[in-house]
Every structure is written in C-alpha cells, then in structure tokens.
Length: 494
Image 1 (cartoon, rainbow, N blue to C red):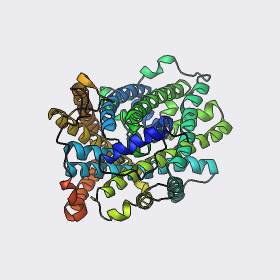
Image 2 (image 1 turned 45 degrees about the vertical axis):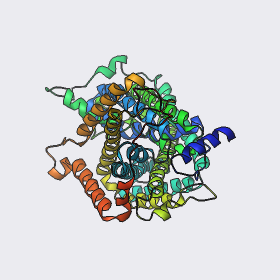
Image 3 (image 1 turned 90 degrees about the vertical axis):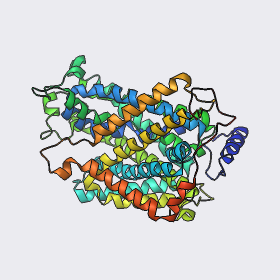
Image 4 (image 1 turned 135 degrees about the vertical axis):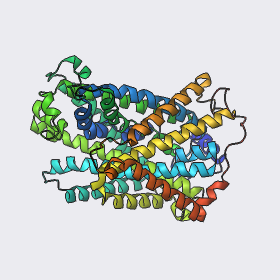
C-alpha cells in the first residue's frame, strides 16, 4: 500500500502529543477505513437478520423507520466526527469520554461499549450460522449452529491476528459483498414486480383497531439494530493515515451509504413479494427473505447468493472483533484494566495487539456457548452501544458548556449545540424504545430481559471498577481542562 512518509510522520508526532508511541501499523486510507465502518454497520447482516422482524411486526410501512433512524444517527455521527478529528486514538469512545469527563467516566463508557462489542461478535456469527448451515445442506440444529459460530469466531480471529493490512483485504471483499447483497439483488428484484410502488405506505392491518404508532415504534427496532458501527472507523484511528481528515468522512459515508442501500433493498424485496400476507405470516414463513428469493429468482440462484451473505457475516464479525480489540488495547495502554501489561502487548511482526485479540476471541467463544439466548445477547449489545453513545453525547454537551472547542479540521461551528442536543434526545428515546417491555403476556423476566441484562453489566462494572486496583486507577486520568492553541473556531466542541 502506498504511503505518504511526511503525513505519517505528522500523524506519529500528533499521537505522541497524547503520550503514546506509534505501535500499531498505520496503513489504512479512506476506502479501507470506510470499509471497517461499513462492514461493521453491515446492511446485509442487518437486513437479512431482521427483515422478517420488521415486516411481520410493522407491515411494509416499517420501511419509514429507516430514514428516521438514519437521521437521528447522523446527528450522533456529526458529534463523533468532531471528536475523531480532535482525538484520533485507538478505542475511540473510551478515549473520547476520558478526555471529555475524566478517567472514571471514560472507564465506564469503555466497559459498556467493550461488552457490547464482544456480545455483538457472538450475535453476528450466530445470526450467520443458519445461512452457512443452509449452504452446506445440514439440518441446522442448535448444537450445529453453535459449532458453526465457534468456527466463525476462530476464522475471524486468525485473520485479525495477521494485522490490519490483511484484515482490510477481507474488509474490502466484504464491502463488495455488501453492495451485491443490497444493490445487486435489489436491482434484480425490480424485474419481479408483484406489489405496487406504494406498498411501503401499507400497514396490512397489523395495528388492528388501535393506533399504528406503538406498532411502528416496535418495528423501528429493525433500523435501531442496524445503523451503528460507523464509530469503528475511529476505533482503528491509529492505523489510518491522516485520520483527522479521513476518519470523520469514513464514519459519515458509512452511515449514509448504509442507510441508502438498506432503504433500496427493503423497497426491492417488498416490491417483489408475491404474497404479502404469506410473507407476513411468521408461522408459515419464518424467513421472508428466503421465501421472496426462492419465489422470484429461484432456488438455485438463492443458494448461490447465500455465499454472498455468508462472506458479509464473516467480514462484519471480523470488523467488530477488530474494534473490540482496540478498546481493550487502549484500556491496557492506560493501565486501567487488570493484566494491562499482557493486554497492551503488540506483536512486532503483525503490529497487532495480539494478546488483547485472543482475550477478546476467548470471551466471544465463551459467549457463543450461550448463543441460544441470542435475543437477550443482541438486545443488550444494542442497548450497550446506545448507552455508550449517549454518555458521549452528554459528555460532549458538558465539555461544550465549559467552552472547549473543536479541532479546526472538523467543526460544526454554530450548529454544534443544536445537533448535540438533538442527538442526545434521540439516543435517550431509542434506549427507552429498546429496553421497554413489549410482551406483557410473557413471564416478567422475559419481558424485562433487556433491563435485567443491562443491570447485570452495570453492577459487574461497578464491582470491577471498585475492586480492581488497576481499574480504579482510571480516576487519576484527568479530563481536558484547557483549550489548546490548536483548537478551532468558537462554537465547536473541544
């Protein structure tokens, strides 16, 4: 990969201003950095995992939740872009939070975010396991799916172990599969028109005689579960050439391209659905995607297309694992996690935080054994991500009130305050929507599973923070207290 020595020297000098030396390999340019974020966000993984939920919960009109969530997340990513330009550091959210609000606050942001990433690896791989089972022609029992999940984690770890440059090869292939899996199949399905163009305005009566709004809020989780992961472009910032310019653009483009391709794919599948009532019948059609593909392009093409989906799942899991590893590495480098010397080790051959990678993999492997509780795992993973996001939004507002300013390379200027406030309100609303009980007929521990799982992670975090001498050292990491001479124009952040 072509390098710019002068720019890389500047990047290294900027990193040293934060007290860190360049240990990771700085080789990624814009497209590869975009690829990390785009394959983690993964329209293919989100669409093929959740299309049935969205359609069978909210009817075809669930489509309109996509632009609503993308707009809300755009407010978030704009604030993240200011932070990414100011603090282009590995393990982004942890680093941003500790500089916004201090080490203790940052430690808890990293705790929620790190666990959400680890659980996401399992959720993604377990979600992809049925497609692999189908492609291989095996039954897909729960035990088989768990074994496939374990194998996927091992493969992703081996690829990550070889370094970010080799990982970017899989990531770039993953981007191609994402395009084929959304735009490619979408264009093909446009030739199999069975529903009118206005199908996206139809609810198919899922609300019964009541308001559609509560049903729409539940179906909104289709989009809420998909449109994050763009921040992973910042998690690998120390491996990006000129990250202060490239990382913000990579995050924004990952979200916008992901939103556009998902909207197109959802519309194409709805437009091509031969029998909408059958597709919405969960008992008769547990996987509407498979039904629509088989009924339109045929079984043979559908089986070939399975491998496009499988590669997308593999690249998505690998991108999530890379992000999780950088969070652990960033913790360890600051000496605020047990076994920090071991976890901060970087392989001189592959320039990868190899020990942090294998610890992440082992935890993901152990979580895979509990993959049968996929709904609980996935729900906490999403809530954990949103919780970490909103802690950053709150910290950014507080820092903004202290008069700290944005880097001149990316500043929202006078728009910073309203965007930050809207992003915080949106995120809190999404957390409530994700965590609220929705099945009163189920046992209470099922209805409150998200709240209970999140509470366990919170309690465990406090126990580790106060009982571990290393973690408790985070309180000595001070927040940014002065406006640097390099800060940009007023009205921005930090």
